[in-house]
Image (cartoon, rainbow, N blue to C red; front, side):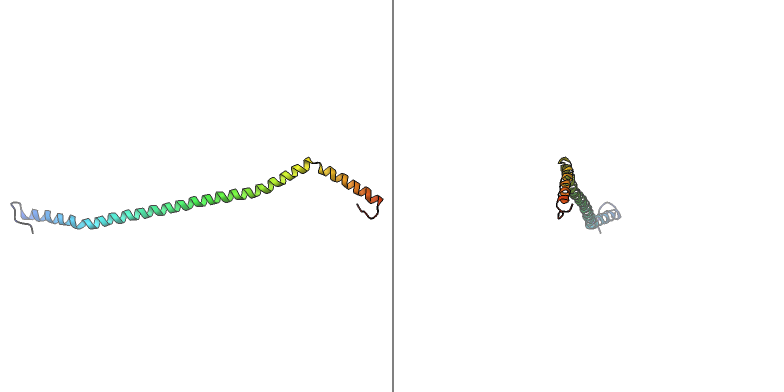
Length: 114
């Protein structure tokens, strides 16, 4: 109980008890603030990890798509290039000429068939 003063002793007791309550609640409030801060930090770090994983998956998908496109375009480009060279080189007409020569030789020489 508080020391006797000119103020009513009940008032001084109430104020003293209120101050004690505030002092007693301080550790609990501090710990609850700490727990909230730590849980918020952990939540943000989990969100950052998920975002980083999503971005990594997007990068992997894009690089895989580029690789597949490269594989398909190399074969297509090689076939297109070879076809263009064949069409410009008159190879079909040369093959017809060679076939005519082989047939002509086959008629003159029985062991060559055409």
